[in-house]
Image (cartoon, rainbow, N blue to C red; front, side, top):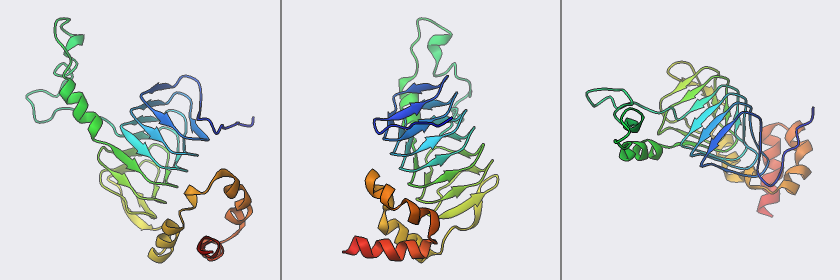
Length: 210
């Protein structure tokens, strides 16, 4: 079955829960996903069963199924971890929730760069930045920033290798093909499919300069 994505916003599959979010053109949210206080840049998508909170996602992000981004913390510095401390209205109708606690949670944002691939079941902690073109291995638990065009795997996630040499990564970042409009992407589609990265750069850097 062909999925028809829209320039007007997200294709949201059944049984999702979406709260306070913004979606760019040609985005897609997999079935059963929960997305809170987050934004998806153009062409980004997540697979089924994702849980994403307090996250700014760039363009062309590829997020596999069952990924969790920005899982919330409990108050480890207090006498109890339990959410009766901040969801107090659930236990005593006369009490109010701890709005300052929720505001602090929401401020601890994850930032995902452009053209990132996040593998199945990965977890990315709050306050982490994933650089452009990075790859997060399936099942990885990311607790610190990941450099652009770097592959990380494991628990906790550690660098496996660079996706490209530093010079290629720099040139891709400067080319910023993710900012091309939809028609230009279509014109370059066969080159994206067939060219090695250095040949692609050589062709399109020249076009950009002229």
